[in-house]
Image (cartoon, rainbow, N blue to C red; front, side, top):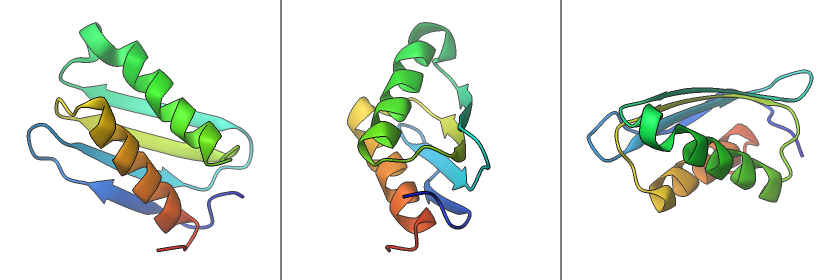
Length: 89
């Protein structure tokens, strides 16, 4: 099930992440901005792609602004954005 509309979840506060998702025509594109990009950028990317795969999202444009969020927070924000983008919430 693909994303139907632009949606967001999270905040720009410290230890949180702001996630935007919108429809895309082909594949997943991921734009990541993070205060810990050099240390944890690849782990954050893998977490996001894992959540998208679990949710069955194959086509989407995702933008994340991370302010040092834990993995569980990133997962929750991506899940919430996906639900909102599918118009489930």
